[in-house]
Image (cartoon, rainbow, N blue to C red; front, side, top):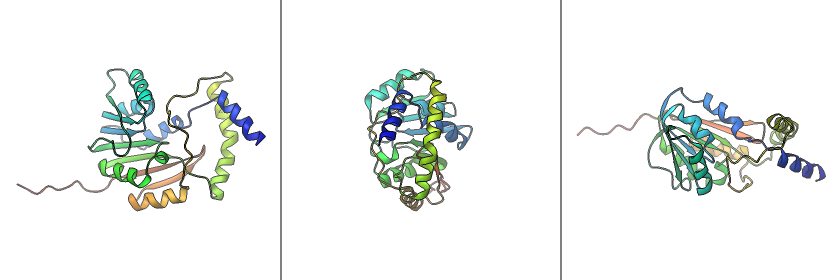
Length: 222
């Protein structure tokens, strides 16, 4: 317990954004240009602004009005991002997107309903990318967690370069512990999204990538 308290004090003074580390990884899974993108749980809009460099339109949704207002302040007027204050999945826009992203938010949402909403809004040929957090239970989970501790310290030192930094403001949601294990996440996700690719990562994260290979709906001729 003493060690854990010491680590907490260390990271409180030298925070770094674990989620932003995955932004380049996310972009590598996406086409160079897309028509539209949806970022669910956008926080201060860092990923939404990166998506705007590839998409003609980006809708960014967060349930927190204060952090959404901050995202608007940080986004230049010429950047095509529309920020919406809404609860996911019920409040998501009723339209289709070529890209949907969701970073470290899914464990705060009703899992099945959220993935169904993402699936139903993803256009044919579109890509869904989720960075998630799961409850540690298996030996692999614990091994990755142990390996992540010293790497996390190194990253904190590199990111802050020996100086104290302000806590990242990309998210303001309460730090709710995840309820599902990675095997549970993988099993339920693959049932809802056939062909979804999931893998564990360091720094207490996992990823899900799914491409919608369903053909477009064929409307009867009139």
